[in-house]
Image (cartoon, rainbow over the protein chains, first blue to last red):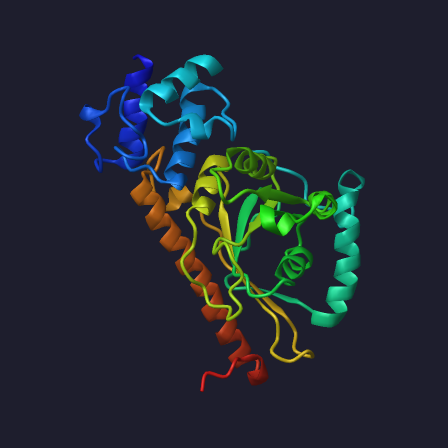
Length: 78
Length: 228
């Protein structure tokens, strides 16, 4: 499974049917399109660390503007 | 989760934390004479880590809890409470972990989670602010996230100083519970986290009700705030 699919799976678990996962692309904005709040962002970051075995820092979180940004960050950290 | 030996009163490894606790224990012990009361016979496991959640109605709460829980406590503190560099240095020495609430502070959360994973108690005030009336209001969801990440139980506590200076402070200790007791998913959804936050608030309310029942049953009506 590629990074995008794994991220979509994580989003599906975090939002549990609240958002349409099939419409999520690399261009999807996490705050504006998904409606991710700060606590959800934190949860997502924790989930990404567990799923991809990477370590994120406070400086990384503001960079996570779109799903594509998250994918780029994961690739950099691997 | 790592299981540790029962905490010693003073441990050379944690001297910076234990000495202030010892001094505070003597002073606060004389002034407030805190009494620890368990609301049930199911006592918390003294050898495993846990997230202690408590109401916050006074600046003395962290010290009262620190000397009353029977375990060494780490504290989660907002960056504002950490103050200037000297204060921050001293508080960190005493076991405070600073969290910047203006950002999603994943570095601070990680430190806190690691403390619990190592088998220690971490105290946080999930209301996120001082509530002078002692009322338990809406909790922040961060507590649930941290307990989930660390895989430790949540221990609800209600702390209250007496109304008069000569009344004893009471620390009501509730029953610890795991996230998995209420949610069997490997990864709870945001809706589950909101629900679990409400359950944590209910557990704190149980401790609060147990406190008033205890005060009434022990005939110390002066300790009960006037409602008229």
